[in-house]
Amino acid sequence: MDLAVSFLSSGMPGRSTLGLREEQMAETAPDLTGVIFQMTKGPYQNNGAAPWYTQTSIGTPPQNLKFAIDTGTNILWCTSSMCAPDGCQHYSGGRFYWGSSSTFTWINKSYIPFSFGPWGTMMVVTGKDVLGMPNASPMPMAFYLSAQYSGPQFAQLDWDGGLGIPSGSAYVQQGNSFIVATLMNQGTISPNSPYVSFNWDPNTRRGSCQIGGFDPSQYIPTEGIFMPWSPYTQFKGVEYIWSTALDSYAVGGTVLATDIQFCLDSGSSQFKGDDTLMNRTLAMVGPGGPPVTLALNGGQMTITSDMYMVEIEAGPDQGKDLPQFNPLGLTNLALVGSVVMENCYTIFGYTPSYAENGEVVLSPYGMWAFNKPGGPKIITRPSSNLELPGPKDVIRY
Image (cartoon, rainbow, N blue to C red; front, side):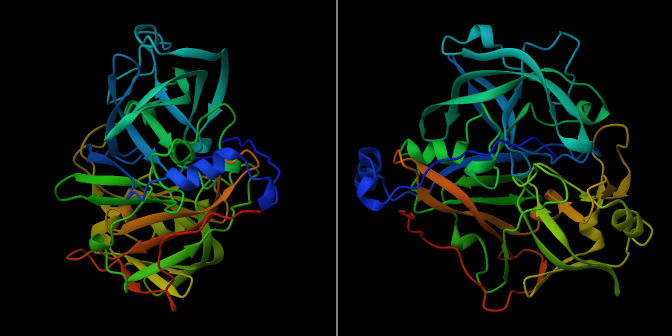
C-alpha cells in the first residue's frame, strides 16, 4: 500500500545527557515476551487484502471491532460513524461510534484523503481514544477515522480497520500513533525485544501476532531466511514497507526478474507488484503449475501451486480457484502477504535506540521467515550463516 510518509527527526544525545525517562525505563522495564493478539481468518476474498484480523476494542465503554495487523501501512485506522449510513460498505460491517465513547477526543476534524496506492483511497479525520490490549490496560492511540470509501475492494474487506506496523518510527504517518513504540514507552513490552511475529494456521483458521517477542517453539531455527531491510525507493514515501533485496524471481526454471525488491505485507494476500512480472507469471501458472521461487540473501523460498492457487470463499468470485498474482504498477517490486505468511513463521525486527527525551525510537532491521514444525517446507534453502533473532541492546548515542 503506497502511503504518504512523515519523517520524524530527533537529535541523538551523548550518554551523559540521557533524560530521567530513559533511566526509569531501564530500571523498570520488565522482561516480557510481548503482547499477543489472537487472530482469526475470515473468508478469503479476491480483493488482495489479507483475510486475517484480530478483534479488539476502541473507546469507553469498549466497542469491539476487527482489525488487520498490517505491516504494509504506517497508520492506525478504523471505519467510523463519520461515514454516511450507506457509505463505507465492507464485508465485516463494523464501525466506531466516536460519540458513544467518553474517552474520545478530536485531533483534527478536517477531511483529508489517504491513499493505499493502487489499491484504493479513503477520506479520513483524526482522533484519539483508548485501544484494547490483551492482558494489559487499554492504551491511548491517535488514529484515522474513515469518513468515506467505496469500491469492490473495500466491499470485500473482512476487517473494519488496521493497526499499522511500519518499518520504523521515522516512517509513521504524521498524527498517528506507532503501536510498537507506544507499548515500549509505556513499559508494556521490553525495548530489548523489538520484534513483531506472525503465526497463522490456515487449517484451524486461528493464529496470533506477538508484538514485543517471538516463540522459538513454533519454528525451525535451521530452516529460515533472514532478509535485511533495504528501502523500496522506486516511489518516494513508501520506505515504511518491509522490503528487502530480491536476488531473483523465477517460475519453474525460468527466471523472470533479478535484482528487484521483495516485501512481506501482512495486510495483503496475493502477490502484487511489477506489471510485467505479474503478467508474465499469470501466463505461466495454474492448477498443478510450476512453483514460484524467490532467491533472497543466500536462501530460497518456494511457493507451490497449492499455495498460490486459492479458492475464493466469498464475494463476486466465490467458488473459483484463482492464481493470486496481481499487476499493480509497483515497478521492480514483488509484494506478498498471507499466501506466503500462512505457510511459514514470520518475524519483523527493529533496532531500538533512545531519543534525546529518553523515549525509544525504532529503526528497521530486517525480516525472518522460518518453516514451522509439521508445516510445508516453503524455505527450501536456508540463508547461509543464518542470523537468528535474539535480545537487543538499546543503542545510546
